[in-house]
Picture (cartoon, helix red, strand yellow):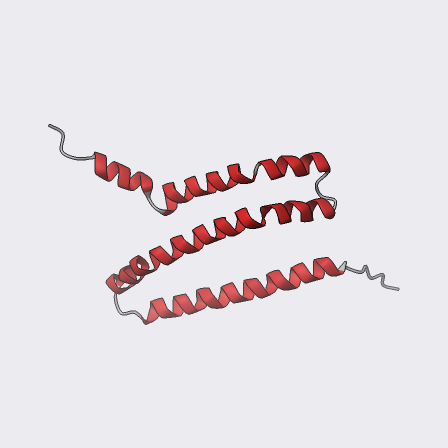
Length: 127
């Protein structure tokens, strides 16, 4: 006789939601790749990437803002599920702005190419 374990409904909901998200991302990447293959030359692809860079930066900043806004709810959810105790909960609440600040620093340095702009501005002719 086979023994079946019941999966809690909360895990099924998360699994279903993340599966739907993965399928949506697969279709989005597929549509993007299809659009790229339709373009005739490398310069057209480069122009499209340059055109989409501000939108990608805005989406990353929006995701950082969403994380900052939902941080207390996520920490409380982890506390209610038993993954985090009360002391860890208060420590995680205190870490919210530190995490957001580091994500913004990483975004500025890598995503917005602050290093490259700085070195370009400082690499003038040496007198």
